[in-house]
Length: 146
Image (tube, rainbow, N blue to C red):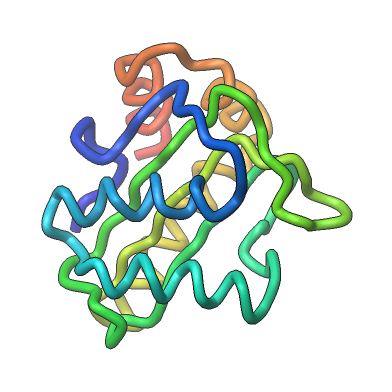
């Protein structure tokens, strides 16, 4: 299980729309061999078909797909956007933190979501993650939640 490790976190990423944001978060997981390319496509397809259902809180998106879409290992990446983008969510736009959720089983999926929820339930953490300028700053926030 890989949760917000340095290789799957990027700070100050520039994208121009929601699809690029989803792709950026997904590609970190592809590069880490945690999901397959097909999983990133499934994440973008889910957004196209179902809208911004994964924009779960103000400024936070957690795109994901089903394990059978190419999930290899339970993992969470983070792309912190330099400039927030609109996902089309009436209450929670614009999004600045995009957590890519890679899952290889439903059970692992829920474990990762719980960890992420604990981290994001603290609005102070969300502010710190949004303001962070380095991975080191993000690592401190994540480690405080363990």
